[in-house]
Image (cartoon, rainbow, N blue to C red; front, side, top):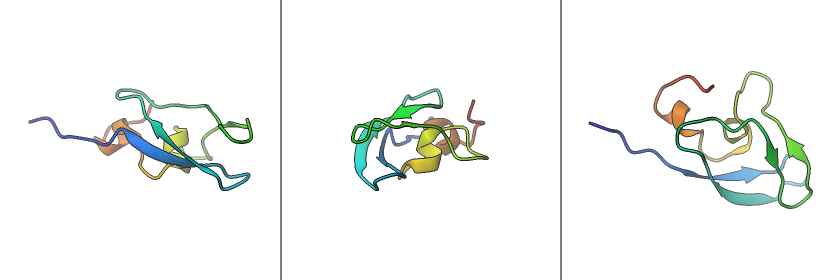
Length: 70
């Protein structure tokens, strides 16, 4: 049985605390994200592989499924 997972996560910019809802890729991690407010190119925090795992309200789908994120 396939487990459902969330595809929408709200990213919070670490520079200005602005938030933007985003749709995550279903089968991959997203390493870079260009903030829609300040234009800063975000990378994951040390120890994370994905910007959604670092700055999102929901971790990326591979992590939600208990898989490695890469």
